[in-house]
Image (tube, rainbow, N blue to C red):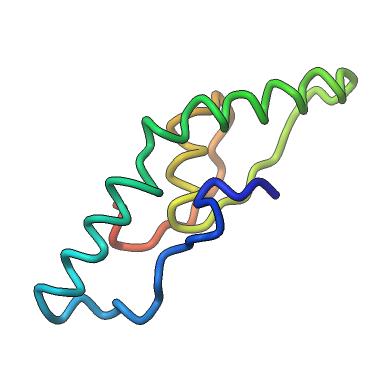
Length: 90
């Protein structure tokens, strides 16, 4: 499992977003560590390596919750049967 947040995941103490400080803290995380543009190349590289290593695999299943689900949906061309995303991302 790649660590795209570089050992600094979203701090759960900011939930719920009930004051300006928590909202600002989340916005900083969302625009730095969780920035889609920042992580796009790394994620494509991971998927490319998997495809190269497992050439016989014809279909892939991807599970991602919250941020991971949203990123996978934006990056990968696959049949979306069901997805689970936090209300925050929809």
